[in-house]
Amino acid sequence: MAADKVLTAAHCVFSFGSVEAPQNFAFGLSADLPPSFTNNVSAIAVSSHYDDNNYDTNYYDLAILTLNNPLAQTPAVLWSNIITSSPTSFTGVMLGYGDQGTGAKSGPVGAAARLAAMNLIDTGGIMGLETDFDKSDGSTNTFGNPYPIALEGTTCLGDSGGPLYIQGGGVVGVLSSGYNNYADPCLYGDVSQWASIANPLNLEFLASQGINVSDVPEPPTLLMFLPSLLALRLCRRFKAQ
Image (cartoon, rainbow, N blue to C red; front, top):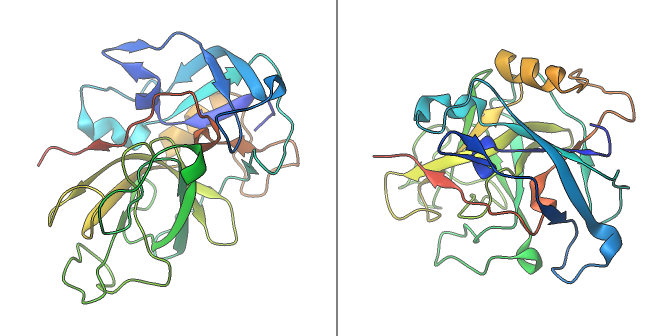
């Protein structure tokens, strides 16, 4: 997208039927950032298909933030192409600042803990996407291959609004929520749920915000994601069991 736009999850900026007031956000790898890395949010657009009182609308859990000042791409601020085709069965890369979903006790949260992990995109298509966190003995499988791939991990609290990439490609989803049928959140058996970029209603929303939704965008048509935003309230939600 343009340098003044950020894509995130709607529930990060929308609650109880209203949008959060625009605030200041900092971009980068450290909470101690120079003023040039701080941008004001002038507007927030939430998908009209999202309802924070209806879990079934998590398929549409997307929002666009417009910045007052364009942000240059740097090693600390990532822009990404978007992919509009279904990524099911591809290897995905997830990125976030939240607690560490390592299969053990959750690790620290914050800018210094920005981490990435791999996972197979097991289910989804054009509606929503899911990844599950498998244990080495195959005992915590929810769907797909019961055994983990190299560097497999999961998301955790604080990762909402973060991107799901296709390995070697662009962004295919935005983290919305998760659940675990085997243990506590973020441990082995954890399932992450992502709003799919390929969902026709999500493509419609992005296009309404002036975003080129082709698989191979022109150079200015890029996406920035909220894992680069350190001052925003983020929380990965959990599905009621």
